[in-house]
Length: 353
Ligand SMILES: Cc1cc2nc3c(=O)[nH]c(=O)nc-3n(C[C@H](O)[C@H](O)[C@H](O)COP(=O)(O)OP(=O)(O)OC[C@H]3O[C@@H](n4cnc5c(N)ncnc54)[C@H](O)[C@@H]3O)c2cc1C
Image 1 (cartoon, rainbow, N blue to C red):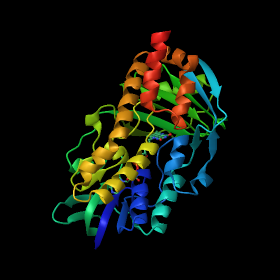
Image 2 (image 1 turned 90 degrees about the vertical axis):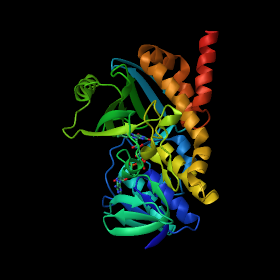
Image 3 (image 1 turned 135 degrees about the vertical axis):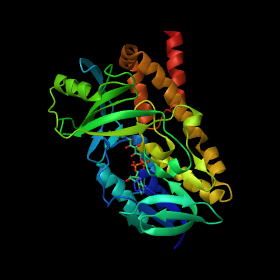
Image 4 (image 1 turned 180 degrees about the vertical axis):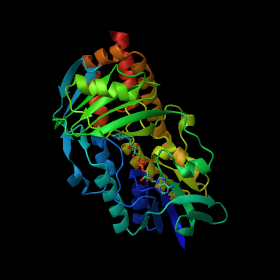
């Protein structure tokens, strides 16, 4: 069987790629190794700026609209700022990802769930090996997440990531999310309306710390605590873009915010850029993808600079948040500021204070 593009992975990066490619008239096969809809460990928090990337109808999936953020220090002290505008939305990842897959189907993509990508051979046309046999394609998009087999086949290895633990529970919050710093080396703990979790790029004992944190806030701990990894990008070399006619998007490419681990926005954004690269420069899509991704990568590099300072001086970052940095961050969530503008505003304020 022949396709223009085979996309591996039915998460936001893969489903969005398949949707955008099919809308542009290309013959697309999306393969997902699990039966759909599938569970994905995630807090499901979409920053408000995601709106401009998503197809219509996605808002019916919103479980909570976030208008308030609490920043805490070690679960001991905290402050809250509210905002008139929505800052973020909470969705159920299984529903959200399946919605995007259905959009791709409606746009004409073929979807094989319960089908695993096994490898590929590059020739004039690419031969892609799956658990359902061989298919041929001109291009391959690897959107197969943290443990991407497509990325491994290209020789990439991940060396920067958060380890994370999360459990699902009604926390009593509705329009509010809480984040605490000061608990782990490089990362934070969170309480969202329906989940509690912790992420760290350091060597912390996450389970112990999560238990203490949960108890400290008077929350009920669940016996089902799940764990997964979140990659992040803070240097240009961390961007695993792929090679030739093989492009990587989302977690497979490491395009995740190094400050808070926001990955859904960048998976969607990366998918749109990868599709644009295939359409506008089919003879060298990887070069084009790198070129188009430059502003996104620069943003993540600035986020990395902020993250390194904030996590090195966590009490100071907390106090800085209280002095107004948290409100400035809200403008990033709504798309009014970029990480670059936040970075320079912070230095200016520091210089003037
Ligand atoms: C605990 C936790 C909380 C998080 N919270 C948030 C949050 O609140 N907001 C946010 O923006 N980000 C969050 N993230 C990050 C976010 O989940 C990821 O960045 C996002 O899912 C990346 O999307 P993706 O499409 O690249 O990969 P994924 O969503 O991981 O999708 C990859 C898909 O590929 C499939 N696959 C894998 N291998 C193969 C194969 N060989 N063949 C076929 N299919 C395959 C998988 O089954 C999966 O469905 C969180 C992550 C974790 C771990």
